[in-house]
Length: 580
Image (cartoon, rainbow, N blue to C red; front, top):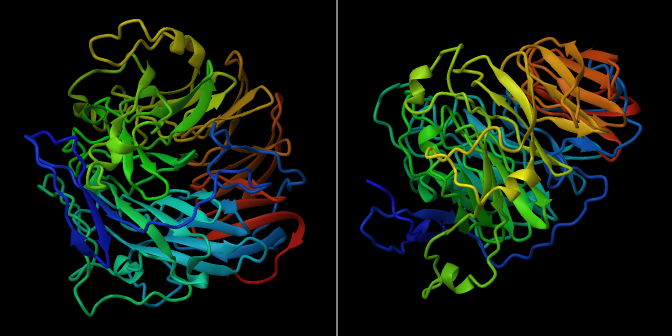
């Protein structure tokens, strides 16, 4: 049965539910929002030398203007290390720096508070200058099935910070807005149910075992039974609002949600992390959106894509959106889990206030994002019944993990076979966004995917699978793949200048700053290359732990996260203490 496009709004205060239902001929969707309204917001502004989101706003190009960053550091001796902070036991989130604080997602493998025992998703906040632990958001796991919220993965999404508001997609498919101060300045409210939010549901115990093929369904997140609610302390997060995308948007979360939220104006743009079910062969939420737009002040869903992407998702929706101006028009670039790149017109709610608010102050339905163009990343990939190619390393559909990067009217994106279940082929491609924008009047093929050749500037084959986002700097493109290769190409032509061998797969993306390229790998090696046409390895640091997170730089400091530690790396510093 198809879901209705009507979105009833449930406003919860103290987990006491008031339901507004709109009935149609289809089953209703319900948007569950743990909502606090009336807090002040600040407009987006440049944060000096902070790094308030993944990559540059809004191109997603992971380059920085920081200078004086070190060529190497030593985790054992403490050379060039300002401070070290202890994390959990798995960390896949990129550190974000804003307003004197450093934010990073991890798991609860090393609990900082004994009341938070067991597997949890955790966002930690540290003092930028000292590395002192300030506060943490602790999120219980989804327990219906491990494929909704993979055990021990923790929170893998990076935060996006605007003023004193911290936006995050957590491990169980919620979008949360947090107070950057934590509980240090009190529980701002009116949402004051942090204790209930951090308390696991009654009867929760050990993580469930995989149940491939079982008819598991996502359940609405429940309030714990009376008398079991944890009490927030001074080092817990202050939640302003929470949106449950599984209940509200009808998504099917897979492997723990991952999304880097893009802020533009009053809106949040994010991928939904909807994907396959526990069999890895079925899409049980075919009407689920892949890209949604929320009001940043309230969490209200105001728009979504209407491209019917979900039935063609091979694994999950991994890629986060970017934004650029093409022919005077602001476009949102999004790589779907079906291997198609989309450009949508940036959402504007001008003149739509009455439609969004409804006669009773509740939303009628989300708007549909206006598609400007689409580009088939892998036009030779098979169509239809795509999940029969599961575990086929020779042929199958393409998936995109990294983000589309907008640079000088072009979109750079890497993709190919799924790293876990798909073919080995992968490419880095450059798309002319202006050419595609001019050809939108042409009819698309009947499969709706668009012509893969239209708008293609160049295509470069990679060694094997790719999870990285490309970085463009001084006319060069840098990209790492899972075939243990690091590539430098001409951004204009795609001509390769050099390829370097690296140890281990690259799940992280390259970060370019101060004439250097920084990259960590899954075998625990952290490389520093010269950002030039000539191959030059400046250093190779053995971190001793796998690295999934992309390095960032802010205020003269390089931040490197391994599975268990966060390093603040600064030229001339020396660390002789313990991780905090």
